[in-house]
Amino acid sequence: MYESKNPIDELVHLYVDGAFDRRELVQRVVRVTGSMAAALAALGGFEELRAQPPSACPADVRVPADAPYLDARDVEFAGPGGRMLGYLAQPKNLTEAQPAIIVIHENRGLVEHIRDVTRRAARAGFVALGVDLLSRQGGTAQFTEPTQQTAAYGRTNPFDRRSDLIASLAYLKTLDSVIFDRIGVTGFCAGGGNTWDLIVNIDEIAAAVPFYGAPPPVADLARLRTPVLAMYAERDRALTGNMAPVVTALLAQQRSFGLNIYEGVGHAFHNDTGAAYNAEAACDAWAKTMTFFNKFLRAPRT
Image (cartoon, rainbow, N blue to C red; front, top):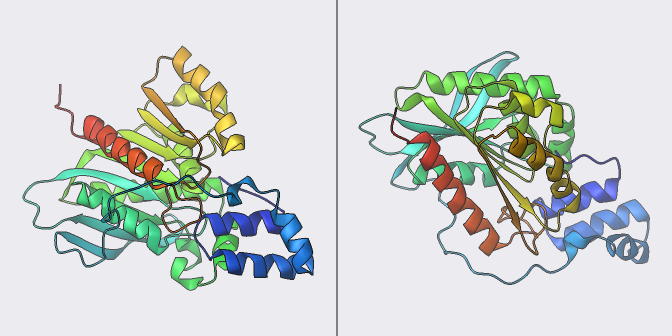
């Protein structure tokens, strides 16, 4: 998970995640620093603001909310802290139960981008649930400004987030459209960290794909039983650098594990609403994600 006490760091991170455009970023930093010159100087050291390499991706990477081949709707279900909110998407007119994927948002809550990613998983044939980890505070819709959203996420804690994700897993298991023991999880940034946290604390997840999330302490990896495919960025050096001891530990423990580090891209490269988006890396990572979930969630029973 991304955490920072520096307001400029936080503003840059919101910009990279697509919360606002570059002009608004500069305006907000000016309010922090007091002048345009100081703002530009403060922003000059951020590698995330350098131009991303040009790349191409299919024009239909996004899935509209009214896609005729999907059933997608807001849902509510019971959680340990009260009402849980989520966004459920699945192929229309299912005739038999399918594997499911829990989609965990970044540190801004269940925003439209994550709803779109949830629909992308449904387009690939899965039942997908985007979970709102701001549910205990009334849900993401209560916070319309990006800094309010990140502040709300900052008021959550690992135990409550894990408990709410376990409740989300339990909810999926009750659905007739879901194969109860074929449920995977993926998450982005803070959601990647929550993905790691979930799979080292419960063993019911059949496959996991964390995107550029903070990994758990190496000692916790001894509890891992879930196959993992981890997606990281070469220029996201702090988080990616933390993966070296993870790889060593998982290889020593002979766990089912894969790691992709995408050259020349930075944090949040998969978020096509943000400045760090790299279509080539994002499309490749998503294709590998769906292949991985198909392998482990649709494997014949032995």
